[in-house]
Length: 142
Image (cartoon, rainbow, N blue to C red; front, top):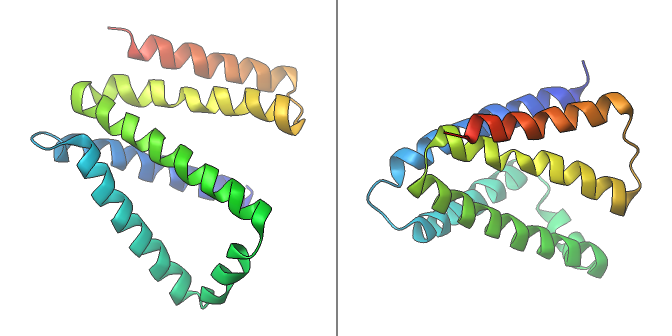
């Protein structure tokens, strides 16, 4: 088992808790304000991780690279929009419906990686991506 798989599984588990904690926390508050607070907490937490790792100097190196910064900014905007929409969906929908639809991002990412990054998709991978899409839709349907 590769280290990437361990990290991916940890990402999936922690993302699942985001849905549960988010749904509970959003009951009587504005979803966009909650997302803003969550983002500040995430930024402070991640700066703490970078500091503990002794890699604060890497931040200035990254800031100096225009191409990298352009894509990091685009990632930040995409992530912020994703979380705004996700928290709005959680506020008004069921976790059991919102979370599977959100996972269609896997399907979209694979398709985009094929077209923009030239990543290859085997037949078995294609079937898996199709099953993810079908499963997400089936789980979300009432």
